[in-house]
Image 1 (spheres, helix red, strand yellow):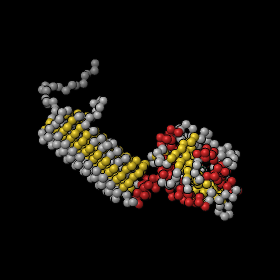
Image 2 (spheres, helix red, strand yellow):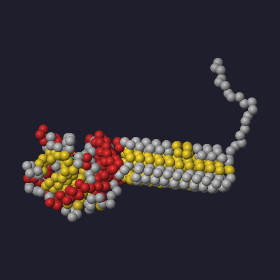
Image 3 (cartoon, helix red, strand yellow):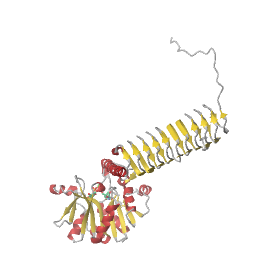
Image 4 (cartoon, protein in one colour):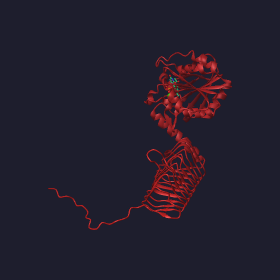
Length: 456
Ligand code: UD1
Ligand code: CA
């Protein structure tokens, strides 16, 4: 049976106090709505309709990459969740309809599958949760047989109803014809003058339509309405991700001080110290250690490599047994071969550092290819940019570059070459020889250090 998912993301989002639509606020580095789409992409949904606020289509398209066929529909005026669904209905051609909220991002595939299953014997299924503190959510009212007979919004609850702990996640599955019938009958809520989707439940009950609930965990249906909720969602998500990592054997010094904004995969015996942040797709090999205050983005790190504190690694391919940092900046397209070392205050970009080579202190390596067992002295700079174009530096195996050397690209330093400290090298340096470029040292006799002038 074919399914359309409608994601409601067009509310005013007043409580977020932002210029951005609520569904585009970020949780764990991704827009809230992207989380929903990731779940949908795993849940056999045929197409998606996104209901967005006026004049925000571009912003949504920019954020959303999904393989499911997606239609963007503007809700001209935020007249409530039922009105949002009504706006979507002309774009729903399938027999079944799943309604999701752009501000309920942590929904799992398991629950989507469960809702789909439950709908086989019903015309309407509401995803609910039993929560400690139900404030802010709609409460599920059930009859004596345990059938849902209404959802009462917080504002409309009497004191007794406020105590109900089973809440509406906002996520529902419908038979499409049933949804069309029910939505058409919803009247505006007298207090808010908005059309509430939640009213569909009471109407369905009176019409004898088969409806049921499926209950999941509180965390999964956490609704994000404000910046405070957003921080809370980060916390819930962090707890989930770090628990999964620790269950898989990763040592995390403090699970409250690690952020994973994307996908982190780890080998055995990985250790992650405090305040490490992982962005995008990061893969750590066996025995990798990640030091405190380190940021790793879209990179692969080989077995037994140590990343020391305060290092920033992006778009890099790091081999095994490497040592990086502290305070290293590894920029995109850097490749470190086995056993390479990049030390403190070193920046690398679009470069290869060969097996066993060392770049240990205060250096810039850009657009360079460095061979094996080469030593780059402190304060070396590859001058790769002439103000217009970038040029390459090629350094062979077993080269020794002294401290404070400038290598003006394009240039080649052959294998076995030695370059004397303080040189500005702009021509080819041959192998097995010392190349040095340095003004002659002189000492001036009789020179006096200036003294401070007397004030008159
Ligand atoms: C809603 C539910 C509440 C439920 C809670 C779960 C209603 C009336 N209330 O309350 O029962 O417990 O979600 O988180 O349904 N939206 C539109 N167009 C609109 C209004 C809203 O697209 O005109 C979208 C919003 O962008 C949001 C979602 O619908 O993504 C829910 O709207 P929101 O205003 O956040 O409803 P809640 O007060 O959280
Ligand atoms: Ca909400």
